[in-house]
Image 1 (cartoon, helix red, strand yellow):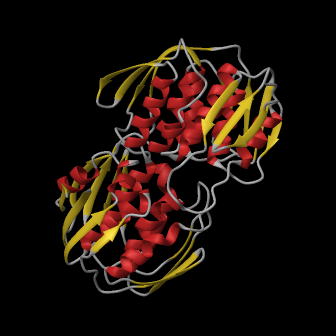
Image 2 (tube, rainbow, N blue to C red):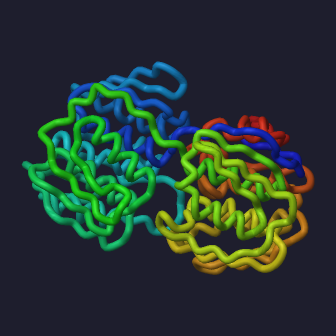
Image 3 (tube, rainbow, N blue to C red):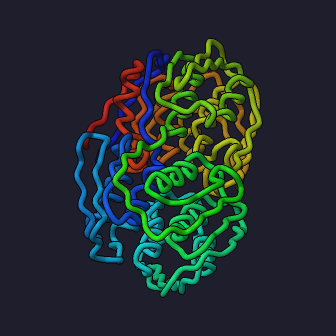
Length: 419
C-alpha cells in the first residue's frame, strides 16, 4: 500500500507546468481507432487512465510506440478485434469511448461497462440513445455493452441532459457515418473541442464544437498521418490555482489556457485572491485569509464539478460561512468527512454543503474517495498543522502526473512511501 506523508503548514511558492488534459487524452486515444493509418500524439499525460487506454488499444491490435515520456505514435491500420477486455474497461470511466470509436470504424463493439470514481449514478443512456439514432442495435447484459450496425446513417440527436461523455461518443460514431449528424444540447467543455479538433486534423468534418450544437458531416475515412498536441489540463491548472489561495502562496502556472478558467478566476478574485494572466501562464497569489463564498457547480462554462473539492478546502479555512451546491454529482461531498477529521466544520447533505470556516486544519490519516477528492486532501495536508497521511493514491494517479513532485517543487513537504 502506498501513501503520501505531508507535513505542514507550507506556503507554496514558485512555478509549475501543467500536463496534457486527462479528459481530452482518454477520449482522443480511442478516437485514433477511427484512423486508417497512423498519428502522433504530443503532450499526453503520463497517468494510469492513459496507460490503461493504451493497453486496451494494444489488445485490439493497434501498434503503439512511445517516443518520449509524453509523446506516443499510434498505428491503427490493422485492428484485429472489436472486443475491449472487460477487466481493463472496468478500471476507468472513459473506457466507454471505445464503443463509439469501434462502432464507427468496424460497425460493431463489445465493451465492458465503465468504472471510475464513485460519484453516484452515472448512466450511459444518452450514449445508447445516440448510437440507436444512428442506426445501431445496442444491448446491455452481463456487465457488457454490445453495439452493432450494418451501417450508420447521420441524423439529428437531442441529448436530454448535457453530457460530455455522450457528446464525444456520438461524435466518434458519427464521423464515418453516411450523411450529416447534428448533436443538439451538446456539452461545451474544452476537451469536447479538443477531440473535435483532433478528428478534424485527421480528416473529419466537424463544426460547432464548443457550442450547444455540433454538426458532423460524415467522411469516407480518416487517413491520419498528422501530429496533434493534447490541450493543457484545465482541472490540474485550477487545482494549483486553488492551492495557491489555500496556502496564502504565490504560484505561476505555465502551459495552460486561461480562458478555460474564467469562472474559477472570478471566484478567486471574489474571495480575496489575485490573478494575473500573461499569455499561456496564470500568476495566482493570496496574502490574506480568503473570504466566504457561494458556489454552484454547472456544466462548462460554469464552475467545474472537478474543482469543487479543491475549492471546498479553501472554504473550510475561509472567513465566514460558505455554501456549495453541487449541480452534477450527488456523491461529490464524500471528501468532507475526511476534512472534518482534520478539524474542518462542514455539514453536507445531499447535493449541498455548508462550510463554517475554521482558523486552521490539523494533520490526520485520511482517505481519497475519488480523483478530485484526493487532490483536495493533498492541499489540505499542505496547509494543515502537523503530519497528514493520505491513502488510496490509485485515485489520484488516474488523473495527475507526478503530482507530489510538482507540489514538492513549490516547497511542500510531501513524500510517497510504500507500507
